[in-house]
Length: 378
Image (cartoon, rainbow, N blue to C red; front, side, top):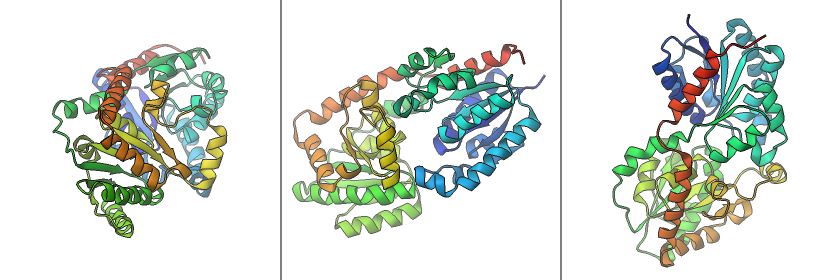
């Protein structure tokens, strides 16, 4: 008999991870039908009802969420009603904790026997570990992609599987065929969201201008998420008085060609680590988001590389510390201090080795199918 799985993701990265998981599940169980909400990759594999809401749902920061509170509230209740109509065999929630954790709580209260699975652990270990025992009451399985998370969740009694990080497999072919790095090239990665770019790229462009005065032999390239971002970033580079080649497209190619880089906090920092780029982390956000986050976050580091290492491997320049002068000094240190860049690359390689080998999506799929195969009392 065909089984139905409701799967929810709210951002582009979640769309990618969900699609990988869906494909892996279909390889082992072709009869499974997927419905839910996510992005275009998921939509290509799912049936109706399906809600491609990524473009609107992928907000960043507390202020953006508050502005769209009515939208998210309506979506939340509509999804609960749709799940009640469809009565899926399981619900898989992928990252996106602000929405998905609330949905898990509501689903458990309304449908006690429903199997609820979470893929890509929300980083509650950074800002609210007290939620973990509650999550153990809402969830049947946690699939985590970082090794230290397994112990944290298992202490609460929640079944947890470390499946590895899918990025390792994603970049294996790229790493094997990597071109030589261009010794005079500095890469700039200001993020994929317009608000991120507006807050971060002026500081990066200003740093490039300072670096160029000290090292006129260097070239600068920046990765843009879209053509509209290219135009916006070109204006910022012109305002800083520096020549930066800005292209929309393959940021990963630039990560492999550049000799050092400045990278916006987020998934890109782990991508840069996997691709061996020596870099500094840069983060700026809205004042309200920063002040709230500063009071909630209980860990010492922001970047996942440093969290995994338990020490500062990549230097972090956050909010007021993310000045053009500070960023320029760090890039010049990596370029001018003997072995600074090569030692950072070696440290990055050590950290990435903790993320597991190929097959993360398949391991996750098998764990989900195992839960689906088990009977559950109402």
